Image (cartoon, rainbow, N blue to C red; front, side, top):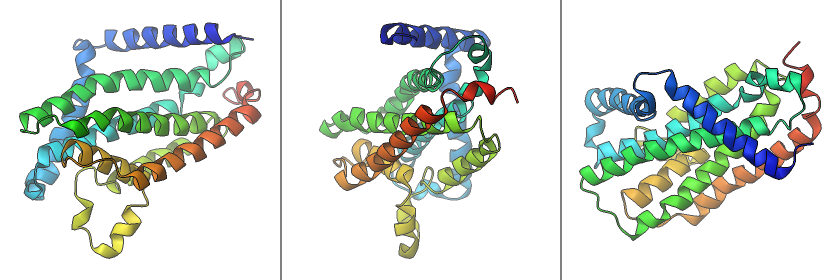
Length: 257
């Protein structure tokens, strides 16, 4: 049985090794962590900012970045995390290791990359003329909330997907639905009022609003929205704990069927 200290050391070693291996494959190295979300921004800006008139939204460029950067972190983490146990099948076959090791490594890796991407967001806000204010001090709280939301979901789906591989396709489709239904590139207030309440049932839509309120509109964190998102953290956290307790020993048999 791996002790807690050994587990932490193994996680940190794996994170460092994986990140180095990832950047060594590309000529632009670490810059790809920044270039990839930047390319997504330019595509969405061209489509929704230029062709569909989204530029009419005040501070549209920081508005768009406050949607894209959190979304990119969320979607990449979910996409990477849902297959992390399957990708670790060689280790699973050779030795026993708690299966939550794999999502832990995946979650931390993507969080580290997000810290680099976050620099783009701050730079865009400053260049757009948005000066730091006391509300910006709330940003770490929002980042922590998103980290917990990502972690709770990844821990759950990572242990479930090996049993039901079709879930990969369902999750990929759901990510697209969540993106289009979260106001990543549009202001939900432009929607008919009858649909706004439905829109605000999406916790990720509320999360993006928290980023925009604090960084663009100089508003404090909406406590009810914060607690609503945290409710999903608790739900997925409990489901993850139960799933890992019940399925940890059985997973080694699944990827090799």
